[in-house]
Amino acid sequence: MRSWKDLKIWQNSHYLVLEIYKILNDFPKTEEYGIKSQLKRAAVSIPTNIVEGHSRNSNKDFLRFIYISRGSLEEVKYLLFLSKELGYVKNKDYVRIEKRLSEISYMLNSFIKYLKDNPENSNNLINHNNHNNSNNHNNFSTKDFL
Image (cartoon, rainbow, N blue to C red; front, side):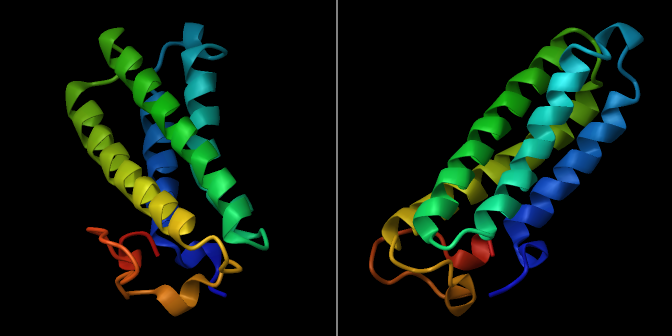
């Protein structure tokens, strides 16, 4: 099995965390334990749950952690929007990060579909890399997230 560091979905999520931490440097001190703290936790939760799910013994378990990642991603979307509305995030940063969030959302949703369609695989993702899942009519390939 491949390392979680090899998963494109983890890599993209990790870079999101780095971007979030960078913009948080410009937040006011008054938000240290408010939006800033919550945004950090939600952003870090995305790749962290991918890592934890990867360590599980089945796609069913992995799926549960990917759902948690997706929930955290939606939390980041809202907190980023709120931060922009409050004037804490520049529009150009918001647009750039929102684009990354959309990419990760697509990857997570594609991965959820894959894991739901392949519940019996014991997290044996490497054998499916760069192959379309011919058992269904998806518009994605595992290369979209692996």
